[in-house]
Length: 102
Image 1 (cartoon, rainbow, N blue to C red):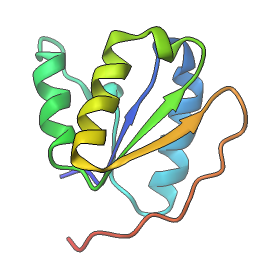
Image 2 (cartoon, rainbow, N blue to C red):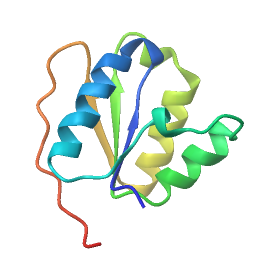
Image 3 (tube, rainbow, N blue to C red):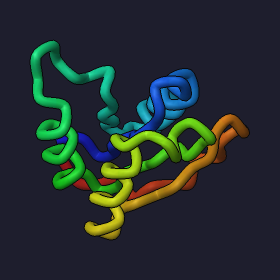
């Protein structure tokens, strides 16, 4: 089960990829839509992941605020009190996240 879910606008993919790489180097298991398999129901898959992760990072940008997907994912994370907002395109400073026992 992943530790972190990253929500972002497709146009902010380089930011999401850099963040996923940095978090992976910290030993965290990160899920973002790069891990989505062809034919999977995106809405169902992301809802399932968000219901299991310790934190959901939402990369907010001028593009993501208009994305129905990002807003829905942020809302679900906020409902679980696991929402960690970030901003793009500015350089993001990642907080230390608690490690979850495996």
